[in-house]
Image (cartoon, rainbow, N blue to C red; front, side):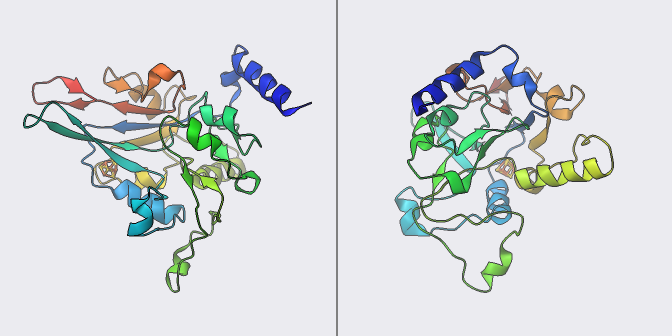
Length: 257
Ligand code: SF4
């Protein structure tokens, strides 16, 4: 079967009724923008947990930063009557992820946890996934970055260190999800709500980030997902993201994105 036929078959898969219900879990993150103060602790925690390289000022200036979460700023209104707002943006773990249809070597795919994962040693660095991602969530390793001693002791042994030519992005700290699932399996029980916390959610000082399994109707994220303040980024693109935002409550009682 040729590559084109394989891609066609995959698109047909997406259209099959009930295709998305087959996942064992549907890990979901809810970010309450009314609680977020833009401190960036989530960004720092992601760097530490996932062995992200710090590329320096020059490379950052070329847009080559490797941060998996960014605090996106945007301005509303006309100067001087402007409102500056911000929103933490990470991989949205789209259920219908455009990056997956774009990768020519299937380095990115959906796993049984309903996550959009990345196989680093399959990636050939064509950049297609990054081009297809409407959230600009993917990062490319232009070089092999190494931490000088003693900072190499900081590496998290649960996470692979990537090399030049590989595309990467966040996956809700999949290593923590895996550890919680293994513990639950050993204890012959299901993973409890709140048992898994990605590094960003753990570090957030205001508790703006919630994480859990949407397949569990009693989970905190499933309840928050019904909030009237709920919205998702670029929902009109039909990507069906697994990150849900709750609008900020304004002084006049209204809510705004
Ligand atoms: S750590 Fe929490 S409060 Fe700070 S930017 Fe991230 S989500 Fe917002």
